[in-house]
Length: 115
Length: 112
Image (tube, rainbow over all chains, first blue to last red; front, side, top):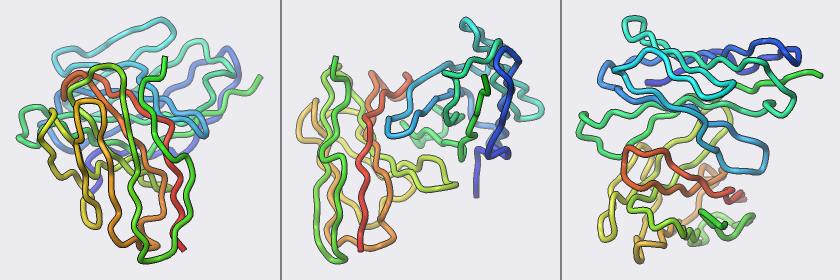
């Protein structure tokens, strides 16, 4: 039962264009969401987060959008750069669920930004 | 600037052998976590420790044990390794359970 789903295993975009990575979730108790980026042979690194009381959070070239009614979030990268090529994981957290400390990760989307 | 340090980086075991994966963080974080990453599965939580002296099961705890040795160190033990435990293991820490987690670079474990 995959509670957090990233349905696109891979995405390829041209340098300078927008990258849009999508994530869907099923558990309405999730109220805090994060995106992580992972390069090969390294651990994931935190990128950006959003609380369910917001619908948008922006940090430089990275913006996360949350649509609670659709249980959907997306990460926009504008403009995309070759160094953004990595695996991107979305993750969800439910502090009210009783399962404390439990981040649920999606399967990941591999982004390739072509020069 | 170490952050979260995992040892070893690579290990090959035979079925039935035991092994302890070590993890240490130098950020004075309260919470620590162990995940495994398998192809197409994302990261799945094995065990976590919300604070020193406490541990709790995650999504996939079977076949593993953990020890929160002190605030800095959180070890993962495989008592009798099985091929299904072949994976990349990541340790992470956070200031508390809602703050972003900081990850180590992983231990790639192969069990033959």
